[in-house]
Every structure is written in structure tokens, then in C-alpha cells.
Length: 303
Image (cartoon, rainbow, N blue to C red; front, top):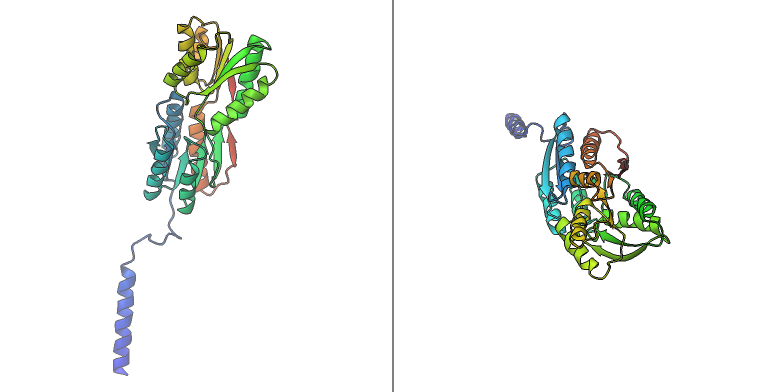
């Protein structure tokens, strides 16, 4: 009997020692946070004023709401963006905001976060696959329609125009082009349509090439302001500064160009607000609040 009692006492001591080695807070089911969330932001490129403004809006909101924001620049490289998101997953981010370079290719990154149990919110451009908590963006189709309607008003029906497209595969490219072409259908003739990858230098080069065979155009719609400003340079060099150019994003350079009369208009979609609303939605979701699937940001035509 004494041996049995001694054995039971020894077993109890071993169990108590084992329990004492468990680290405080190691039980994930009971661990809580008091708003100090770690949020990742994978952004398509910081070589574009629009996305710099989006980042700054996100940083401002994160600071205001006591969250830590980690930003990664994908440099318009879809493969790098997937790697950036996987790195954020390894670092254990509470939620990841993604501004896709390519709406289809980014699906692999979204799925990786899904598999790791990390929620995702997309901003400005959507993801075609994977599960996201919410999408924060302007209505790019409506923005394209605004641009198309105003172009018809400016130049009249039956005229020849050019469309400079964004990055192939980006939802903004598809949606802005859709809205624009629906608005001008049967009213204007698009004689040239080519991607310049949302880049000013490419917008200049592509526009120069288009002008070699299309001297009779009267207007250009570019899917963003960077390409529009490149087109303005090409038109000016060709002595065609009377051609009407409409952009999209309302960056500072574009708004100045509109005020100076070198651009006809730009569609404003408020990138700073997109960044702020993205972080706000992230923290609300992490705090257990319900967020809308689609969070719209108001558009405005600046002319």
C-alpha cells in the first residue's frame, strides 16, 4: 500500500511539473488581442502616385486605430506579389490587404492565406479566385462610363478615338474598358486599342507608335492618369495638342494638367480613402464586427 501511495505521489508531481512548463497564453482558443493587430498590405506598385496615396491612407488609418501595418511593393510583378503574401503568412499577419497586380494570378496568394486561416481584403482591384472578406474599390465600370459619356459630349459622334489599356489581367483594366466601350458604342470609333501597363513611359511610347498610322484621331481615353500624361507628351511632340485626353485616378499631376488645359478630364476615385477604408474594414472584421462584402468609394469627374 505504501508503495502504491508513493507511486501515485510521484505521478502527481510529474504531471504538475509538465503543466508548469506550458507557456502563458499558448492556448490559441483563449488568447485575445486588444486592438493591436498586425496587418499586411501587398500593393501592386509604388511607382505610381495613385498607389502611393492608397498606401499613405492605409498607414494613416492604421496609426489612428493602433494597428501595425506592414507594406510590400510587388513592383507590378505578379510572381513577386505571391511571394510577398506568402512571406506575410509566415510572419503571422492577422489579416492581409491585397491590391492585385493581376486579378487572376493573385488567386494563388489569396488561397494560400485562406489555407493558413488568415482573412484577406482586396483593395482597388479584385481577386478572381479565393475567398475574401470584402472588396474596397470605386465602381470602375461606372468610371469608364463617365469618361466615355464625357468624350462623346466633347467631340461629338462619329469621331475616331484611341484607348490606352492598363495591365492585362487587372480587374481595373477590364472594368474601365467595359464601361468606356459601353458608353461610346455606336457613337465613336476606337481605331487603336493597346496596353501601356498603367505606366507613363509606356503610354508615351505606345501613343507615339499609334500616331504613326492614326493622325486623324480627336481623343484618347487612358485607363489611368500615368498613361494619359504619357499620351499628352506624345501628342504635344507630334503637334497634336488639340486632341482631347481623358485619364483616370485624379493624381496631382493629372489634376494640374486638367487645370492647365493639357488634359480634358480625369475620373477621381480617391485612393487615400480606399486605403483608409481597407484598414478600417480589416480592424472591424478582426474585432468581430460585420463588414460589407463590397465597400464602394464615390467617383467624380474632374474637368
